[in-house]
Image (tube, rainbow over all chains, first blue to last red):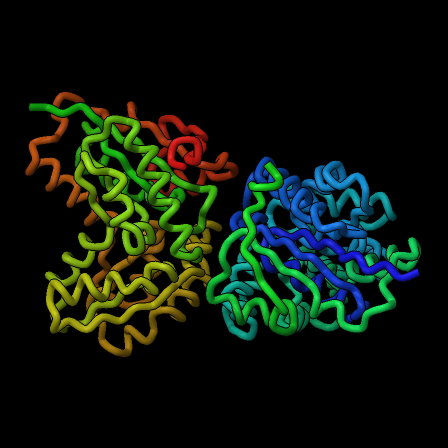
Length: 274
Length: 274
């Protein structure tokens, strides 16, 4: 059986395009419908009430598109309001972006010391700590909110002394403590993989939560027999919607998604999700 | 005559509290009604259409409060959408925060070389360049969008190597060129005065647009005979509204306003301004 329905991708902005990129790389036949609530971006500094509204409205938008699965590419929404997305999406499986990275890290840490960097709301929620403890309570978890790293990706300052110094500032304690697995707990961080690896050294393994989330999408679609085998270029037929007109974003979108978007629309979530 | 009506202060977030602080310092008797559209913050990276919506809705909110004057503390709104605020506020004088700093700089530059740092939308608008040219077309203007400085204030990283390096990154060319007057063209920047002065050296005079905007409010109120002489503590009776619940902001608000706010309310601008 081949299921041509699209995968819904919910994000708080453009960072989740890193998840879309990995989905396309792993499953080129799959169509995607992406909604990024750029009007509320950056979400990682906002109160939980706003993150919940974003989850509810965004999920309602995606559910209008006959999706076969909904993946929450925003780690902030996954950490704070995954239950809100689930309640709004009763008819499709929902995959968050916290558990896949947490699982990958627990399988890989030798010294049972995992680090997490992410946005303030994600770290404040304690979701990573809880998820990792449930998987293996002997693991110690070290977390740090790193909002400046997101600002540096916004400014496309990937290879810059300021970025190196900032990565150092957020991560030197984890190096000292002997963390051997670091989860990049925000979908906007993959462009900083190289500078972060350069900062923490090769002893620390980086876990790209975008990649592991895409792998989980692949596993679930395969297990439920929902893959689309009929097409070879799902990306070309995918739709990308943002709640705020995108400006001067060409470079940043290209950076996160890996190429230009096939199409881009501005969409007022409030009109459906209110 | 003593006019007890409040001064309306329109901002895109909490940065404009630096203007409120200077108003209180110069005119302790004046009551203020402040509206900060924190739900759209940071505004300085958003498209003009959003900045105009913020201007229209915020001005409509303030006009409900029988204000005697409206000051646009957000440099971004002043640069991009001052006309929108004026159209929405036909019955009160409107003061923007671009012209006061521009005027102060033109009066002070000896070498006719003025620098401006501000948020991307402000710089993109060309408003500072136009304002300064209209005042004195012999002056050369050097501008730089410096969004990371705002993020550093958000993170309260005022005295930090990252901040010094970032200030250097944005300003070293202006130092080389021989700019002798630098306008801090965003109301969120005053907390960085010291680190910026340390970076550019004492030869470059810093123009705090928040301070000069407050002085202009004082001049206009005096000229129009609208000062409140009857009270000695207007700040205590002032109201501060934000469009999004404020969280973990105690330190940042204190930093910008100089003390705790007497009261704080969450207020949905859409309910009036739509």
